[in-house]
Length: 467
Image (cartoon, rainbow, N blue to C red):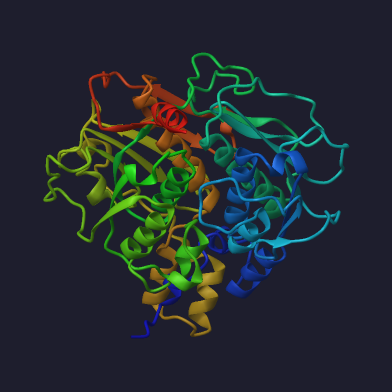
């Protein structure tokens, strides 16, 4: 059966920002604006062999191709064998193409450029940054900066964080021409995300990554849920089948999903999100269980099901039930929805002193975007009726790099739980001012919780003994 999608189902969620803000007077003008944006990545020979730099590059490509509609170009040592555990091809070049990037022999000057790791570069008048990661810390620097982050034990979420911050900064430059974009160090620590922590030097208590979750419940498989899965896919499971994922959603993939959801491709449109994401996860080697049931207070977790849940829901009804259905530990992230706040995120960990019903008492009011000039023109021209305009204007503005940053913070809460680190009750962050984030340490003691884990180092020792 061929599905018919409404304009609300096909609108690019970041292009919508130009409509709602008034930067574009029509959809055609907004789309043309985004087709004028392109981004280049470059990776050196040493970095191309490193799995963490590969993760940064490929995360950057996967995010950027959804934002820079004029094209994402990658140059460097791309014939290198792929060293990360994602089914994207045999070489770095194949992975780039699979994710929607285009390769070329060398950097062509003039457009914004992101260098993956490496040494300081010559000072440039244009936008040129480089990604850095060390231990549980990830971020970006001006490409010419001689700052070197203090080394720490490798952690695969750090390059995801660095790449997401790089695409965010490049978007700020492309969208507004902000001359300050890319001119300062920007990052954070996933082990200690408090605002007073120097992410470049503070390695206090960063542990070697040893324990990984063995059983997780993912509810909502769109923007956030797919970002969680991308992060899980890059974690070093010795035997991927040791991770069991319960995947819960009731929706299908629409054309607009691709603009925010990192695992969505055109070939997946019209498929059930659960089926498509189960296929991806099992392609990675994970074990999956599908749940196609609406999540609400009538839902009850059974004793033999995963006790840790990662929430990617975007509705208050589901969120208000998060601490009422039997999970021992829930990490939830919510993203801003309007053109003014779409780069904001808030993380909650439950149970907490305030119940979920108190935290999400009611749905927050929208921005009344239907009053903007572009929507009025659609109405006046007869392209949509009043109902269609309301549906279209009511959709959220979204950017995939925001979900990627949120996923790093959400997954880090689970990893810190397994490594005896601090748990945070709330984290607030705006990607326009990362340094002004706030994080509140949890007052509950979760040290007695054992949700099930995989011991990476024990598996490595057993493997070496058997050889």
